[in-house]
Amino acid sequence: MRYDLQALKAHYGEKIYPASVRETADTCVLMVDLGAQDALVVAGAASGFHGKNVESWLECPLDHENGQALRAAFPFTAPVRVLEREKTMGVGDRLGICTPGHIRAFRAHPEFTPVFAQQSIRELTLTDRTFEHVLDCVSFAVYREGFDTGFGADGDHLKTGEEVDYALRCGYTMITLDCSEHIRSDITDENCDALYTPMPELEALYLDRTFDAGEGNRIAFDAHEFHKTALIYAEAVRFAARIYHEKIASPQGDRADFEMSIDETATPTTPAQHFFVANELRRLGVNVCTVAPRFCGEFQKGIDYKGDLAQFDRELKVHAAIARHFGYKLSIHSGSDKFSVFASIGRETRGRFHLKTAGTNWLQAMLLIAHEEPALYREVHAYALTMFDEATKYYHVTTDLAKIPALDTLTDAQLPELFANEDARQLIHITYGLILNARDAAGGLRFRGRLYAAWRAHEDELEKHVAAHIERHMETVLGMRQ
View (cartoon, rainbow, N blue to C red):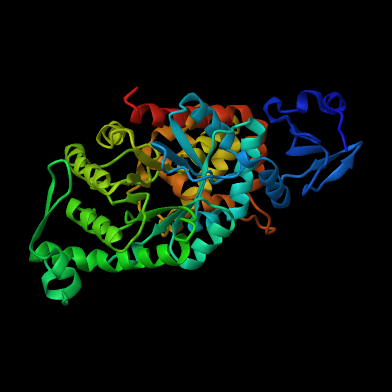
């Protein structure tokens, strides 16, 4: 069945997103703004799509079935493996509405490749979303904006084989395995020798040996260093190897890019410990694309790095050399707003890295609310204060609520200034799930509907806020600004 593009343009006019108009031999698909929501319009041979009939075409909701049909019809809307590219950046969107802003940023800096769909199971739970919904939101935005240079999808901080299976079933092209539950947090310099029990196989490989880690770096394992390293990380490496071989590897090649995350631990990963993990992964046949160590200092949520910058630079230099020695990229987690260390990351990795951000988008969205809907922002902020202790069960922060100005001391025009206050940023950052799922006395969602309506009404401004902030991250890593 043929279609009439002119009839579509006459019917929808300026509601059509210009970059979304795509024609094949017998089909035309485009996206339109219907006010409260967008829709796909499919004319001609509408294989796999569903919706309501409007004249001679379908008007299709942005649901999972149509997301699957869109990815089948237009492969550029489906994720691909991207970690082999030099500069990759995960920009997880907890709201499902920030990808247009991300696209603007990545178009401004095409040397970066995006991982648009990036969520952890914890984030899915706190936002009441699914991996399917996260990917669908990205696919629709990628189609709407005509972004056809490729993006990844990361099942982030997965902890079980079942979670890995779920992300792979949904088509995710990157798996970040969180090994924190297999890393011992009770091991110290004082107790490691007493707690150690013999590990003959590993002793033969590491005990009293010195290794070349590349670029003049030497890694030595005396008895004490070996005992501590093996106690902390040996089980985590065995777990990562098991998941990789059972879930990722296949005779046809790896099913996804594989990252091992060891960053959510009580103590930093020393260069020797990083070398041990990398060497064991290689020995056990794990094709790892990125490793995320726990760096010295603190990478807290939503604020700049806290710690000794000189020490960070010294240790990062060795971590980056180890990654190059083993042929993978460093992954930097909780990378949102870590501006004081970005230049070092860009320099020491020689421009080859994976950087993860996420909460930045939520904070930019809430900054917009403070600008445009001050009464609503005041409600949300007051509620967040009551829920802060609950939120700290999920995130480690050093927030001091006493340093946040009281709402009744601020005019509406001053509310956006709260987002320059580290303590206020962290308050809003870590309470996102509690805010989105807050209930009123009647059991309805207290804030979610009003927040999404406001973001929809100010969509262009949201896109600008998100793009500008992500571009600041990119340009700081590239050394283009402080």
